[in-house]
Length: 443
Image (cartoon, rainbow, N blue to C red; front, top):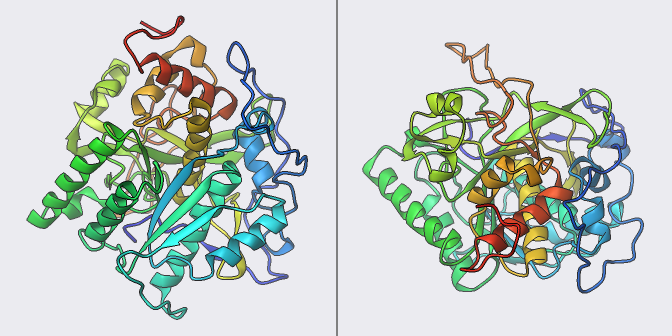
């Protein structure tokens, strides 16, 4: 497998058929917002009733559009109130990048009536000459476009900073030192405080002395990054389903690991489309990291599976090839899927939460698990209770795991419902912020 989250890309020319995708239908009414409703953003919301609208291009139709994401993840009340990520910056670190990214994003924005993206692209380690005949470079081009355009669709006014490496991150240690150097560069230059990572290697590929040393470097950096520096890091859990593989860096306890769901059936009562586990969503118990405190509060049945190890994923979002976000990469429309799609969705939602809080939330994992266990947070995370990530055609067959009520090894705590998730995270962040938390905080 590719050690990063290489989505199941499909590129279409006009007139080509897009097979196996579900038709989109509008979601039902929004679930209630947390008690007290949503505060108004300052400055005021954009007066753009067509924000995110626009049909799928016919040669990638049906697809997910920004308006479809808004319905799927319950963003409408937030976006209308002006919580669109204004003032926040999301950092995306990739190999090679997309040499025509600015033009790709303009095409994407024009199609779906989105405001112009504040985009910064830097290559502090140097540039590799882009060769469209190289599959690795084309794959990273598409990955870059997917990450950037998904973040923009979810958080229309957030800025995106892309840092490119001239080294291909593939297997084991290769490319990891350069990615960490770019993370450090982003922090030292204050380029952003939300890090969206759509790449991975397997824990078992880091068993060499060089690999173990790299794990320790990342662990030390991310622990400080999400703690003292107050930033948030999100990473896909992988697209290998129930194979006995655990992804790094999603396994780091200070990183929010994002798994995948798929959409099935017709829209139900609120909050909309029924989601089940995506068979490609990877999860498992880490061999490198012990179980963090906030997972030790999960029920005894979960503890019997984790056996004191860090469990993945923490959360999930739509990742199935049955219905994908349409994006522009290299001048053409494509559809994509995988946890590469789910991770930037969560990065965009964190941008909304940071804007509402007025500061970065830092490590959101303790907040997510506290919110999921809180009666006031019910509905913030949609529990995925059906589906499996079994891989029956593997040799030997991999039984994988099933989605069950509560946290599981396929979809974690579930899929986001932003209308309750975002203010819920902000409320809990304020509760932990100081010696005199506001009234109503959990004990």
